Structure formats: C-alpha cells, structure tokens
Image (cartoon, rainbow, N blue to C red; front, side, top):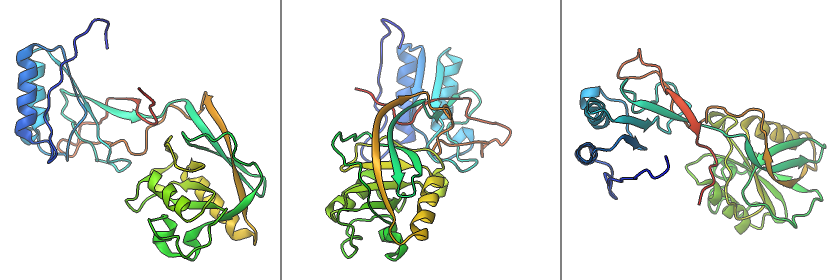
Amino acid sequence: MAPLAHSAMYKVCDDIGCFGSAILAGMDAAIEDGVDVLSLSLGGASVPFYEDSIAVGAFSAIRNGIFVSCSAGNAGPVNASLANEAPWILTVGASTVDRSIRATVYLGNKDLFDGESLFQPKDFPQDYMPLVYPGLNGGQDAAWCAPGSLNDIDVKGKVVLCDRGGNIARIAKGQTVKDAGGAAMILANAEIDGDTTEVDAHVLPASHVAYYVGVTIKTYINSTSSPAATIIFRGTVIGVDSAPAMASFSSRGPSLASPGILKPDIVGPGVSILAA
C-alpha cells in the first residue's frame, strides 16, 4: 500500500460462492468509484474470455485506466491449471521466501533433513525415539494418519511418519498422532507437492518435509529393525538458497482459453506468510 492510500473493499462472495453477477457488480462499483487499482484473489476454471466475469469486468476496468491484478489460482503444479489468464490482467503466482522456521529431522543413522514447523517447543528431548510409518502395514488411511486410523497401531511415545494427502488437513494429521499417544510427527509431501513445505501451528512437535525426504526416511525405516529419530527445532533461519521458487500449489500456464498465452506474469511471496 502506498502511504495515505485509500482501500476500498467490495463483497462479491457469500457462503454459497462467488457468482459472476456479483463479481461484475463489484467491479462496476469500483470503476464508478474511481479506484486506481483492482486486486482480485479469486477465480475459477478457464473459460472463454467472453464467458469469464472477471475477464469481462477487468476489460472494462482497463478501458477506464484502472490496473487489474488477479491471482493465478491454487491448482498447481499441473500444466494449464491457470485462472485469470486474460492478456489485459496481470496474473500473479505464488513463490517461496528465503525464511524458514526450521524443524530438522535427525535420523538414527545420523542423517539430517530440514523441515518446517511454526510450533517450536523449547523442551523437546533430543534423544532418539522409535520411528514408525503406519502405512507400512496399516493401509492407506493409516499412511495419511486419517482420524481414528492409528487406534490399533502402537505409536505411543514414537515419532510417526505421516503422508500428506487424503483430503486431510495437515494439522489434523498431527491431532490424530497426538490422540494415539505419538510423541512427534514427520509430515512428508506427496510427489505432486514436491519441495514446498508449510509453516503450520502444529498441535505436537512436528516437521513438514519435502517429498524426496519422505522417500529417504521410508527407505531408512525399511533398512533397519530399530528405526529411530528425533526433531531439532532451530527457530527462524534466513537465507534459504532455493528461494524464491514457484510454490507447488500455484497454478501454471499455458491458458486453456487461449493457448498462446503463457502465464503467470509474475510471482510473489505466497508460502508461509506470517502476518498480524
């Protein structure tokens, strides 16, 4: 925001959804009010521009000298998953930042793997604890640490490796581990999630790690009769070499409505953003 700038907000969504008529009405009101910039963090599937309420409203705004910026969408990393791809819109994707709130997984074979967690307990023991992967013998729900899936698996006092996915919230997986008596959780990305990890306020000591780390940990578990691990909480670390990188969830081009359009136009910080 520029100093002394006025912020105008228009409600275009309700509990049911965001109807095209409401979006157009909101954009028309903004044009009538004489705003200088329109920023929309909403969108849907790619459709022809003449059927796209945001594209139509944005074209009208541009003709009135109003700059329009829209989110690319959160349907990545699949190709052609883009929203708001009209050429008169600045389409913005999400990227990682060079800050990590570090939670390092320390395996019994001395391997170290960096992950992330907003929950940073100061008194978590650094001694090794038994490491278990419920998906080894417990089925897919147990691999996902779905609610109730660990009731018949001995995870008490252990570090539990959970797979991301199954339409189960990341923090909810930790709650399942905690309810079953687990001491800590390692949350491993699915292949589609790649290396993008999230800084979550977990309900127990946890570390969210990249896909390749999860694969490596599973290989380690299968290689020994007594797998063990702990988590070292290191707090905020600045200067992550891989940043900025496109977030795995951020939608990609090309446009389905007009395949010659390659977007997003720019990316900006959109992963693990801490704000009051």
